Length: 334
Ligand SMILES: [Zn+2]
Ligand SMILES: [Zn+2]
Image (cartoon, rainbow, N blue to C red; front, side, top):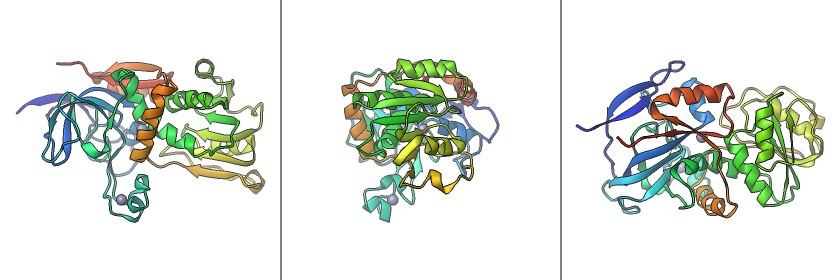
């Protein structure tokens, strides 16, 4: 039996363990990928910290996979051997529930998520349902492309939720998603205000380099009234800060899958038709739209790479807020 190197999650709170696993075989409609790169996301952190219930155990985490098709399973005809594809968080849906039928497959009643219910990309090989994979634009290297697959896709969906008439956009939490969304927002002529952890000068300078018009501490008042705000940090208190900063009819969109409790706040902060929205997962349509748009902007991802065996270290850096931009695991050819 052929085996591969992988990093394995076995129990919440325990570090990922290097393991030698059988190379998976592609099932019906699946492709087997040789993984080149896999992005690291806050959701991976929530899974290994036990904040998201019922993961597959043991699990290979990682849901921003860039790989090359090396084998196709029965009835898998969409890709040929040698093609480069990306695998996102949405691994499969039932296709039949009321949400899938309405075009809201991101809300499917029976979804399976990559690197959560299905083994992901912190490994030399991975299998994926070909219907949920994306072709990756040629202008991105494997490493540059990896953060597009969650930070980019979910960031894009979050950004689209603000609607049309937004001139001033606040972004709370300036990591992988924010740096991509800032480039999109600037491309569309909006003014961007970046709010970071108090005193995080590195993140503030990073935001300015991405094109933000202003960057400062999330604890300080916004220098201008915001038409909309996006929250990418998993801190419920930021919802209240963002509401304080938005004007009438303002939209506050929470982009994360997990957030600490939102403190109670006076109704007048929400009054005047302000809206709080959340984003759950992604649809394939989000991915297709975003991957057409990304080379046109063009999005430039700022990446820190870690070899596969340091995946746990990458998660630790993310937990401590020590990363600027996106973290990507790179898998050497062995
Ligand atoms: Zn993610
Ligand atoms: Zn469904």
